Image (cartoon, rainbow, N blue to C red):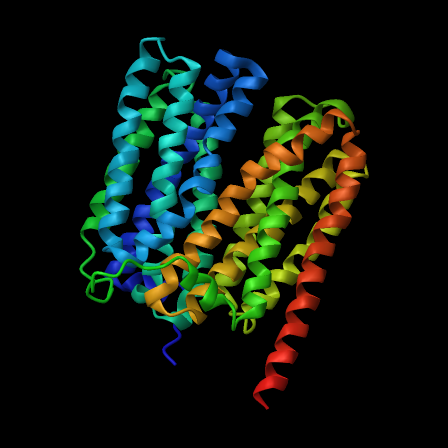
Amino acid sequence: MNRVGAFSLLRRPDFRRVFLAVAISELGDAFHYIALMWLALTTGGPLGVAIVRLSDSVPALVFGLHGGVSADRWNRKRIMVAADLTRGLVLIPVAIAGLYGRLPLWGLTLAAFVLETATSYFAPAYSSLLPQLVDRENVQEANGMIGAATDALKVGGWAAAAGLLAFTPISTFFALNSLSFFLSALFIGSIAHSDGIAADDGTPPRLGEAFSALRPLPTLAAAVVALGIGVTISAGTWIAGVPEYVRAVLHREAGGFSILMVGYAGGSIAVGALLARFPVENKARASLLAWMLYLPAYGLFLATSFSMAVAGAFLAGFAQNASVILLTSAAQEKVGSDVLGRVMGVISLVHRGAHATGLMLISPMFVLFRPAAMFAAAALAIPLVGAACSVIAASAERRSQAAVS
């Protein structure tokens, strides 16, 4: 056992470079998000926002699995560098067009699509390389620390954006994000560690091997299913429901929505810091149980009190980030390196793609039902998904143990 503390991992040069790369690009993404959503709203209204949000979610459904296959076939470091360079380059014309006031909605949509496509290749390569940089027994601490740091930078980026807008055009934020991706590529390119992929024998990795790797790990497989359903419901209710809830029920404006967003990020930061400090033994099972926190989280929204809503947002961020960190860490611990990229591709598709399915399947229901009814339903449905998947996984494990004995 070679378990070390989270901050001790930063003494490892290669992990430190990856940490800095992810942190810098996350800060750039915070600026980018403000510019993207605002320009989408001003050029296309609410429909423009929906179109852009779909365009930066759908690529995960289309390319997520191939991103995982690529991570097991080619050099993971080079995939990450190529993805960062692609993301940096595509933002240059966007920033220039924005500065000249000639950035149409289709340009924003195309850029968002390309950015998410590149991310669909970056994410599995990054997640499958990380265990080799920190050792498998330290992945939870590494994921927790990176998650807490990036979420803190996200909040800081939002706050800094508000100050910069006083004297900087909003399109400058695209240029800042482009620069962040180039710096990220520089740090990742300087990693000395070889990613350890076996020599190519001419046989491309098969996607089915990812599902074969998950079959003997029923709790991990169940946690992947719960992630997909849980994020679909939570993202769908959050994207469409929270802004309307803030306006119609809490009688607040954009500032109130911003505070709720900060509350959500605060929960993500808190659980990242907690998991960086305290290792969890059965990570996949804990990932399933984390969804139970949505009962009090969305239940607090029904109190129609702004302070209670902020507390609910905190709990929602805590629950979802806990589930993601624990599931990712469980896969990095249990799945072999030769197939880990494909498994992480499945997880990335399920996680990132669920934002698109939530936007398409859940968000339109707010046209038919009041926000309170939708949050009440989600408060019950999400924990039930976690509980049902946990029961099914426990039953599968008992049958497997009985077959072996």
